[in-house]
Image (cartoon, rainbow, N blue to C red; front, top):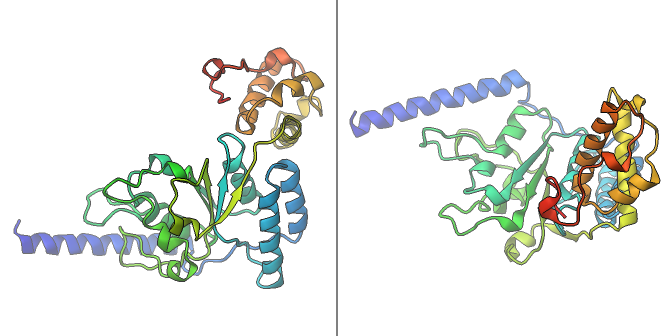
Length: 310
């Protein structure tokens, strides 16, 4: 096929692709997308968040400010881009997941440590045979609400020395003015308003994150929870498991103190797995409560800790 013929074929394929996407958007009913709104009891939601994530007090304060402002206006759920900085395993991503669930917003996590280009965010160029739209376009075009929660996990682990900077698209997406006319690289026929996305990034430190990017986010430093706070989180998590699971009523309403003493030395992100495993073992023995012996091996050495990270 000659160059002219190849170009004509490529334009035809692009037109077919654009038509397919337009039809998919119409089928989803999202040509006129709505914004997720704050629940009437949003102040109680903030209180619940502070209870379930006691070491995220500063984030709760920032959200309280944003929610109070928007409650005076159109009532939409919105906050400026946030960067949560703190040790691994303290619940940064889980806190974002909790917020999205309680606010009934679409939710996606992008693992920035494994991202090799900007395509997960902004799509891949349409001339590639395997071109695909990025997460932002998919969330906004095919989800019912225009203000999803998107988490940029381990932002500080992104390899920016690659030929295609994985963070390049963020300079546009994190600025509301430029994000209003966001164009995915795989679908240049459509501009989409990405200015309402609720961004939360996570990092262990800010040393490797550029100043221009940091200037676009509210940087919050999160401390690891104290053992007492972890015990509190474990109680809340156990209560939610009982309330939300069909088998929950078969177990005692509270955890034994001896079990809490073991759980409080775990990173928060491992609590759910530890509790689920322990509940399974209790069920196998037809008991209505967890014993210390039901917990997975929680040795001090992370190499021996059955998938847990100390």
